[in-house]
Length: 377
Ligand code: KG4
Ligand code: ZN
Image 1 (tube, rainbow, N blue to C red):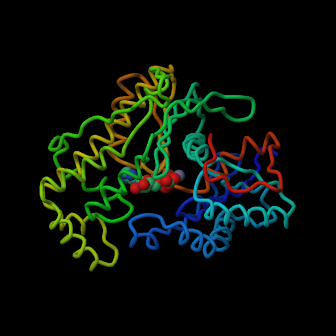
Image 2: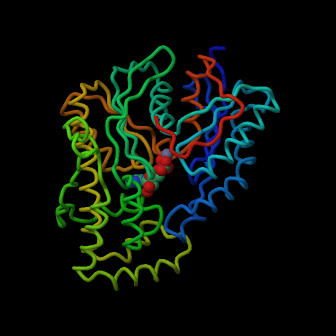
């Protein structure tokens, strides 16, 4: 079945998503129901609320994805669902629904790792544009609200195999964006608003010390073990310290109160309540984040002789990150690929695409599998 159509379902965090993808490369529909408004008042994802919202949204979102693709429940060839990593309760909603549909329709069910999904978002779109020849090994930076991981990928008979060669020791990069935005009262999620405001500040105004990475296991320190790890909790604390020493508290409180009055505050509204000092701090924070992500990724690419670079996950939507990767990777003669912004953040098209090699290999899920909050790739 060369052109099998797979229904993908994704509920690992705060988006309820369903999509239909043909042969891993034809995007037939891609529906994402965001819970941003639900979590906004808390400045971060509240797990119990996420599960409740997934329950509410899952049936209409799947129906819409099938309708937009011109498919019915009967006409799809398989169902793919995110098994992990993610919030256990949120994952369970998608898994229970996918199991029920697969059982009722007697269709194969395929489990997908969310991180492999993000990598396949890039592949799906590049294949859709036309002939795409990937040169291996591929180095993939998966950078989102929950992850900052470097994977070295090689091709195998069915799909790819991955080696995790770097990861964050503490906060994910997107988490740092969200926490800094919360601290500065810029709104939630932090990435898009910081991205929009950073261009109005001086990125050299505030100097942040580079992250200190200690060996993973004491006594077994080696260059290769630690060179490509990240750490983002230090910069979050440094922003807090800057706010305290520069006496920015009252300006932040005023901004918080003012924005609470605006129903759906966009970056332009936030900008109205930011002085130059705040914009400079935002620009400096973003510059430091981008420099760190790009320099470590390129060091890993050199160290492991990568031939292609993929940058994916929610933070890959960042305009400065894209620009810097494009310039710096070109300098090294390394082709770099990103998903479109729509497929950078969580979606189910990437899940349906990642499931296709498994479908060809008849690598179907056993009936008793469950959610794995810390599933590794
Ligand atoms: O991939 P994603 O939708 O969910 C996870 O798997 O975590 O990523 C969400 C994260 C959030 O932390 C959000 O602030 C960040 O991606 N993000 C951005 C941008 N757009 C979303 N970070 C920086 N710049 C952006 N333009
Ligand atoms: Zn994600």
